Image (cartoon, rainbow, N blue to C red; front, side, top):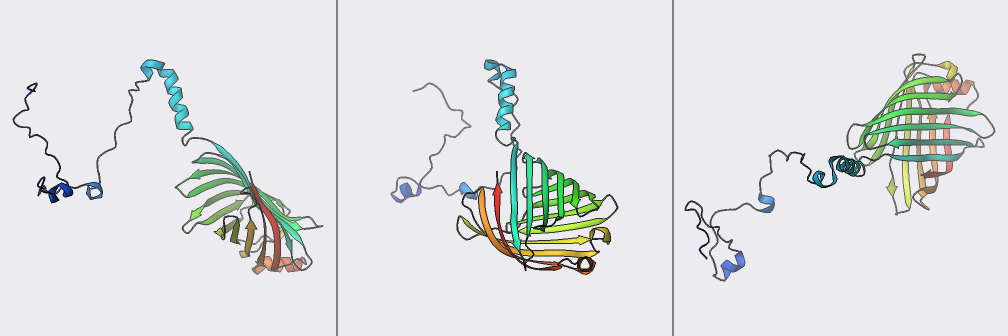
Length: 287
């Protein structure tokens, strides 16, 4: 139309010759190779800068829009959540010495920082609680799959009670194994350690088989609470649960427990069982 003239140094864009058009003789494909799609090299450039000139500020005001951006970030990854999980609440049937056990935790926080409270214990029906503890921990995510946890542990039983400084690691190991390991330093200078883990194998969407193991160690003997140096005790069990709802699942299972070394000797001297098989029946619930 004569409205403008292209500069002499700028070549007009050449249309791409598609293979089907070339087959019909409508055009000739270029001999120059052009990288497309996944053939393109990986980019190495810097990401674009975060914008600071928010156009909406001129319409709604900087204060209102700053609050809007704050809530946008908060509700897309910055929220705080809470959860209470009772992993184990079970009765243990073992050679006429029926007992019980619990293991659970509650937490509040976000993806990176959380306050975690854990509790576990066990005993025999008709007798006092054999062991009971509670932990209050600060949990910090150190990667996509693991949290570093530190805080305090207090043992109500056995007497005399103990207070421990706690340092632990909890998370999801390769193969989808849930693992939890911790070191404990008591107010009397005793060092103990615990390692536990489990795996959820789904048979169906509602039926889950869970192998579970726990081992405990002590660096020195503490006869007043019946703990010997070295490997103190270990548990290996398997539980089959049925999720009536995701939040409520009864289960049955079997478990083998064994005390070792001086810990086993302390139990024998007190007339206590040093281990054996147990049949389990309980529930797993959360909210």
